[in-house]
Image (cartoon, rainbow over all chains, first blue to last red):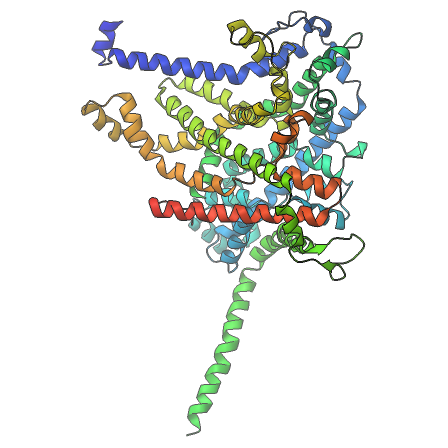
Length: 301
Length: 322
């Protein structure tokens, strides 16, 4: 090995350096992945057997009972439906606003360009805070409505700027020639610019979808009393809080509440997996887009 | 003699409408662009600018039945009360402690991670590690809180099992029930969740470094560590500084999700942050005016921090956001 190293001009210290780097990164990847695998294994293990402990990344007594148990909760399905719906509607509306605003800002000949861009930039730093916002939602009669999930978040300055910097890279001549052909601004946006902006839109769409899918606080704050408007994340929060956080004692509830077939702990893990899986299925496919999009938006500001 | 004022006035009369008509002409040309932007501008007004009007509540005695004009003005009473509240200082301590800890960890660890990953020449390995590293970013804090409490649990939690097995502790520790561990747990959870994601920008910046720089350094006999120190790090300095300014501006807005989800009654002295404090007063016990004062304090400090950070960086380096 050393002969080969010398031939390639790689010293021994370089080799050691490489080994250290690879070791460190493997450990880091393992630490990132292990909790998920562990939770998955527990969720797939027979719950009475799980209590004995010692489950790492493989189930010891494979069983789907935990999942069967969570599928009997009706609210989980209502939550799933609402989460899916808010993710779809919220992402589409958010994409529409981000791309339309970005398009007008990318047009050098648009009068209102400077005003709109400053106006949006301010919203990134000045926010009224939780309480004035809560009062606004109340005054608009949006408490206990589905609308509260999608309407307040439609315009996001950060997303607009990400899409805009992408659009800035599209040669202006394309638009001019379309104009000569008689296309109006909206047609240019819809037919020409939007298809060319796909990578940026995929990035923003992913951000929006992840944000929508993962949020629970608005459910807690505005729709907490309505079972029909619950979301999947909020159901998870409720389940987690009911047995651990607010009880104060960490030892007793997990063991004492074991029913005949299913322990709350295993069920919790099954719900955790159920809530995470949809988003985890999509992100590897969108990776190349978000890496590009995030870099563009943040470095250029 | 008459001709001069006449032509003068006619010039004025002529140029005024021509400015307006020029504007209108362009506005008509821009009509689709206006149609595409103004609805969203109005939307942003309703949901971000208009609530600022609610700040008035902090200077009044809020009564839901009365309109803004009918409420009693109390001046800075709510702020005075705020600064005399012991909980406020506790909450500030927690907020600043956790934000500084996550600022430091949130900068150093992703940079180190990116530096090491950048040294890997085997693309398949690099890609795999990267894909794994983003994973936790995509799950919610609710999921992370569930996972973290499982990992830290005394019933077969991985951390306790490991520490007992290695022999560092004799029996499982109830990590989440002890206040003095709380800040560390929150910070480490944050590191676990966001390191891979935060490293993306640094990796992209590193990909843009000219290879000649490394070749020259190798010719000069620089080791890999020296190359990292003298080439890679200085090259990503602008990126680091811009991100740092942005996050200092957000220092006080650390959010409350993780504190809300990981906290419990036993650790409340360490877990309560500004937003939760406002939430408690405003929505749970209906002291809206007092809670709004907390929100205002929060925003003002955030803006002061942003400008201070920007000013400092402008002075000591050439980089700044504005």
